[in-house]
Length: 464
Ligand code: PMP
Image: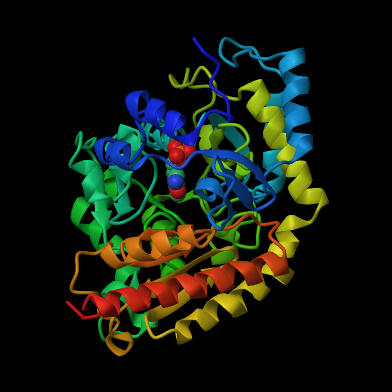
């Protein structure tokens, strides 16, 4: 086989990609006619493609490259570990230093009542662990009927069958079905679903759907509630301030475990180590991945409260685990990544410096005639596009039509910003500088202006 290098013509790389590579969340036939963008290099917050174009990556890859691209320390950590011990498992009463060191460090960073980690290879796997873990826990506790997990419409928890069942994405459920015993309630998306209610009342109303669901299902049948502190893939939906305190009250009152999916929110993205801290909640389990290694290695896990870990100890094996649970190279890289986050005070930088700076610029985008709201927590933000700001109305075109146009203008203007329906979202590397934030905002405004001009020219700036 010929070596496939960065130096082949783009068209050849695209043809091979189209012939053999099935992309996630993609119509591969459609992509084949267009040709995938080939990313060849990255440094800091900047991507370079095979044509030499540079783009500011306002998504940190897939919400994960928290310390930015091109960190030699992480490459060195991987190389060192590969030479010393490239692989060993943590089954059968063995362990290794990277897994010991990383679990110890995570216990130190997590809230006081959480001192245990079950490692996985990704966020999806970790959420599958959570399903089995909470169900097993209640069996051990002598309450074997507590098996149903309550989750939310438009939540995202991953792509494996278990995780996608927890997620509330109907397009995913339609392809391959769902596991039994998951019940969904509505999301706290005031902008789209709040109608005439105040955000505060709406937040309470949505939280109390949890109480109603527990009542309808029977408290003795409900194991846990899972949610992202701030919904990410659903469009960076920031819940009203009344929402999380009420959810916490309900979980406590009804003996329901609270699982915070911190896969995006964790490791500084919201300006604290965990989104649960920003939102003031006390989860029993936290799902982690992405920023744990800044995406340099695939690794995820479940941070588990002591009362759960203690309960399932000394009662026989928990029959669960992955070949790559606690993979030594991934663990070594994650540990080094946490060192960088800590020593460079990157979480403080988000909370006290770059976060507030980005917030002021981002929220000013709400002045644009096509922007209905601009929301941001730490370094995850969204803007809602609308033809009618006063009424927060959707476009008459299919959801996502205008968002896609805007995304294309962003890409062509050197900015990676994603769209979820007609919301535009950002989640840049946490190390982004003020100058780079200015560039991000300038490019976003240009893309918004171009989108606005285009949809007006095509008569698409009308409410549906
Ligand atoms: N949970 C959340 C909140 C996520 O955003 C994601 C990924 N976007 C996942 C879980 C799944 O993680 P992975 O893709 O690593 O399996």
